Image 1 (spheres, rainbow, N blue to C red):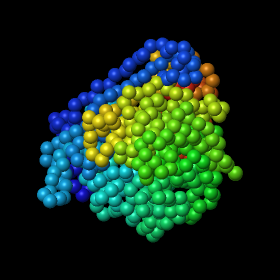
Image 2 (cartoon, one colour):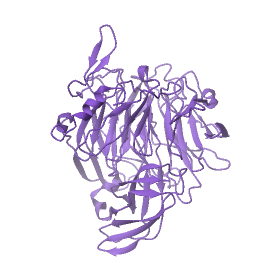
Image 3 (spheres, one colour):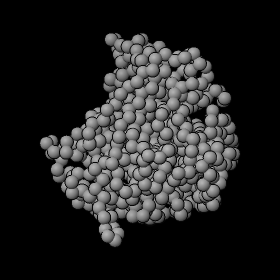
Image 4 (cartoon, rainbow, N blue to C red):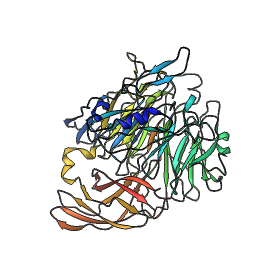
Length: 563
């Protein structure tokens, strides 16, 4: 590993007879089917709307050894779980002789991992070595599938790190760059991949600027005055919500305001109306998502939901009710206005995860308080399904609850099999157990209703798909379905975002243009699809390709979108 003999030693020992030495005990995953729902229960997994149906909850629960503050899914069906390093010992031991030195008087050693790799194929955990502090850092996948990770606190303030994922059963680890660092130290920043495959890094505490990776030496870091304009005495401009629009410009939301930002000229080209309901960004703990891109990709809609009452962070008010309002805006419209709607209950620290169907899952969080150590109460155990195509007032559906509170520093990520991986929750400065909301080392997988057994015969199998697809290319996939296909089948590309602090950096779903499936026989269909026409719609990189039949997605196959 660049800058560390630890990484080199770990790779040098990666022989078939030694690999098992570096894996923690296998995980145990299980499926729990709860039978028919009562008549007052909702159509998928919760209690709402009084629609009779069945319900299914699929949970995988096990100890990972760390509490994941940042989570990302790689193209090899592995999951990077990452905490902060300056938190004391974790419960995931590092291999022998890979301890990290901690300066001090006297100096100490930390022989535990603060990042692990979960292998979804073998259900094993690999401890990873991370040296600098990744507390409240940011990340994004590069076009080659490497995970770029930037900033943090203390010795990680200006650090740039890279994780190059590897195939199941092999060894890979973090690399910390020695010769390249951030121009400005960044703590609570946001990363977004751009149409050319470079990464823009926006904001952070005391950093009202943008910069790029690879570094643009001719400009370094460029001032972004908007972030300073929306900063208040709570610093509600941190972890700005950034969405790459299909026009190629960036929708940037911070506090309660948004602008359209042209990163080529570093200028604001539009100011959007303020969103009512108070601050929405860290530490006021809302969330945001850009809805699926469809049709000719000329339109993009952004949704911002939840948030804390202003002042809750400053005054440390743990029982201040969270906001339940959401704002929805067509960011590409000529005169956009916020359309307001309300969730069934208030929520802070909720993760908004785009499903392969285009619906959005809102999961994790609390109903009172704010972000920050031990500043929230009343865990919000009920996920919500947001159905953007429904009329206003009918878009939210309450789902079956979890029994595990997921408070500050929790994450949620879409998995290739269509489930939602839920991890983390540590509202304390250090690992703390035996308290009301303990440090959470367990992970869970939540199954949306489309994975219920009664839909198995319409669930498609993506049998054939190209591994590499060029912009604008017309390509074919082969899909197998048990029951006859009626109507169009969707082929949708989902990015793999970097999830942290209630926002998934780089998240997007692109619905491709498709033709009517042709029948091949034996339950197999050939579907002709057209790839996105440029990087504004879908930046280059690896995507989870899903076939969706009657609202039921296949298991995804990874494809690389290239120019």
